[in-house]
Length: 335
Ligand SMILES: [Zn+2]
Image 1: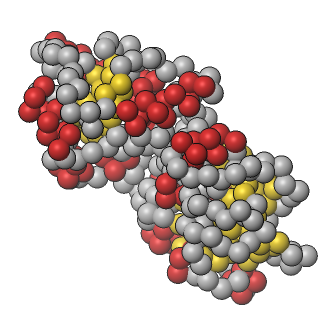
Image 2: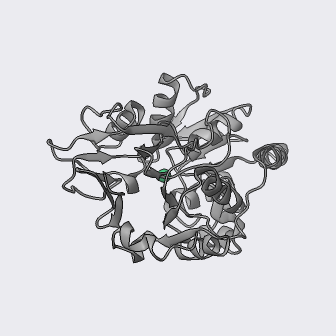
Image 3: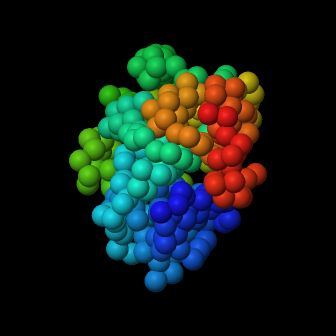
């Protein structure tokens, strides 16, 4: 059997032997198997009836709650191994034979109820490189939680409510988990819907009242509270309302918070670099653990990170700019 070829046409495609695999395609792609790594919207599509989907059962459940029907997924396919990628509940990396390892979105550190990305050696690594630039090195989660607790404590001393913002699937559940000691803790309805599925899967999240801003007359208590809400600009109607009406302090959570200007761009009062992705150092470690002959980078600093890997002696390229087969590439590799 010849080596795999990896291309980027409407998502990532792998051909190995007689089989074609579509990895996180944005729309239907002809393939023997379609892999859905996790239930974030930018990694899903609405598959046709005939597609054979590889995904974890939790990903399918979360997808369904968000309006994507993945049908009956397959977890056990010959030659295919799914590994926890540590990104969100149910997220998986995929290894096809010992040829290709694709991370999907991946985290390099255990936090709360999530583990870190598990790796296996493979000849070809296809990896996300969202934060593939050296300035993105995240602080320890323990320190971040401590700092945020101090911030909430000082707001509570003043009688001021605090809104903790992160994307509603993944980040919002970590925020719900880390800051559950505060009372009352209120969940935006889109966060509550995702929390419910986590609780059903054994994640211990404290119950609390739900806030649905579309219900016009819904009132929040006076005095301090914590709300976990989807990421939204401080200039959005909801956040402007919470600020004006309740004097709420807005706190945004994202890896991008390490960049200057993020807090201002978001119109938030504070921002913290809590991420569900690998930071730069974790990306490098991931490459070393997989020990590949060839690396393809996707997302974020794909070109920059590939360049850094080449300096370290790896053979690496951003996938979007490279659509030829790997047998061509093998001749030019530097390692
Ligand atoms: Zn994701």
